[in-house]
View (cartoon, rainbow, N blue to C red):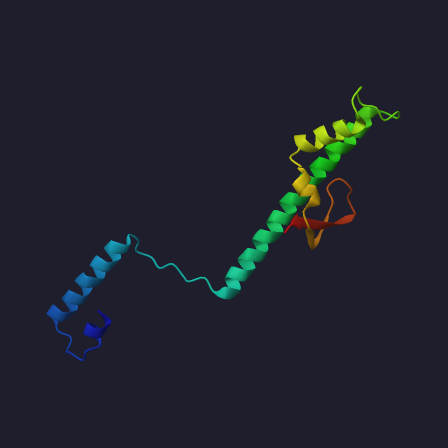
Length: 132
């Protein structure tokens, strides 16, 4: 279509009408009548960084919930340290699995992403970590 338009042929009504009909058919074939801008490398990198930060914040919230559950399990154990007749480690393991922490999560390498103020301890900034 570009070659036909740039051929140097004089623009008469029939020629222009043919180009317009070809454009309408191309737009109908695509299924939309608006352009979608291309994502630049810089924008893609920024979007990936924002997604990584959001994932790190979600992971930090999950870990804070796990710590709260572990602290609740420890508080339920009382000063003697025995939650039930079973081992205290069983109570901690049960609390950890209840919030979704697995042995693989505990052993996974971590990377610091940034800092945020802790909801549990206002005024204290904690490092946000996520599994690599």
